[in-house]
Amino acid sequence: MTGMNSFDNKSFLARIRGGDFAHPGEEDAIDLVLSHVSPAPSETVLDAGSGLGATADAIGRKTGASVVGVDLDAQSVGYANSRYPERQFIPGDVTKLGELGLPTVDVIYAFNSLYACEDLEACFAAFRKVANQRARIAVFDYIAYDASALAEADCLPPTVHSMAEMRQAPERQGWTCTGIVNLDQDYIAWYGRFLARMDENREVLGAARSPAFFDEVRKKYADMRQCLEWGVLGGALHTYAFGT
Image (cartoon, rainbow, N blue to C red; front, side):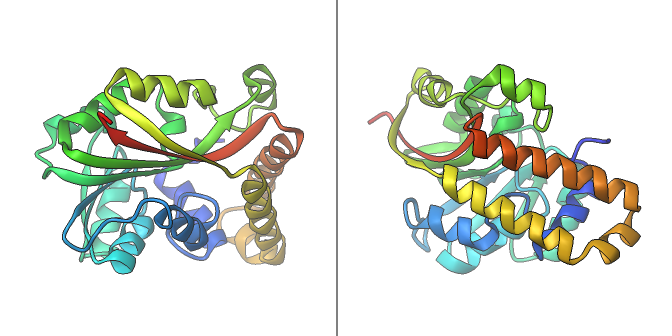
């Protein structure tokens, strides 16, 4: 199966989630993250790995901040700019933010995007290049508790980072971890809700692509939820501040 990060597959997942979101929990997850790291209306926000744009738009609506999203997939960026014209979306590699002509940012969010980045340290080095001296980061993402078992399950790429990596890589680039919120049980509940939505809309979703594609996607996410239940995979919100 083509990677779920392709535009067509992200669009299929968005139909299940009921909005252009690329992460579990949808707006509930955004509200949770904003309860820990929320920008002021006068601040500028970067959504790193912005996907189809709904998360960046929700952050802008909920906070009044100016939001710019960056995503490697140019087709997703084109869609987001068309769908959410009040936000700005730019195609580009998150590890090369310094080359994109971005404004200086006050807050950086990454919602289930850094797990796919092989060089986590390069991501945080790039964040330094666009962030001001008081910048904060919120990373909402998967955590690999058992990398070998996760690789055997084959439901996510082998780049999912461990808890230690999520602390050490940012620190080497001048970012201090200011908090960790365990979201293991939340992820289990969110993926349960996701699978229930798939089952409720099986006929429509199967017709949108094909019944075989539907079954393959459902198995992938059922396997992911099982990894969460077994403690092989987890979820967490990590927050960071620059140089504190």
